[in-house]
Length: 215
Image (cartoon, rainbow, N blue to C red; front, side, top):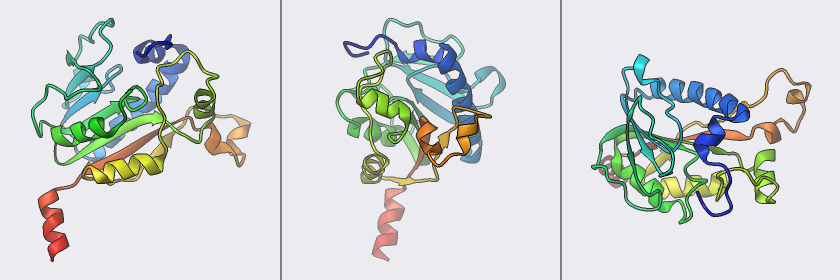
């Protein structure tokens, strides 16, 4: 947590607002893990999205906030978000970034490269974050929200470009609904109310890609 932040990610996830968002994110993650047949997943930051007591998925958590306890229902270890991870190459079929890009102070290149390194071929990277076109992003960009962990925000174009450069292909992504049964949900500015989103990228088999390019 950078100087000036008054709320950690886990603290926010346990708040009234955070619990609602976290619940929706868990549903989306559960669906994505099933769709991409992920059986071994590593999550960077936050509370676990996988219920390890009722799931066949092996779940590991990489924590970056040293003052908060590690969850007891999954294998966990601590690491610096801005440095190389203490994990072997191609160890997972899925990696989850739980608002991780918003927390780094060194740019997103290393995080994306590390995700690519620890993913198996065809493994998927799921990135949860704040939508840059949302009201929440506007509040943070103009420093009107002083109680969150957010250090950086990135446009979809910038994020997709970095992912492609690092050997990923972009899969269908979508916003995570944060409100329900509100009359203004049907208005043209609905997208401004969708504060959170998930970006999904799949690791490309570089050898196959090179062979395809040559042919």
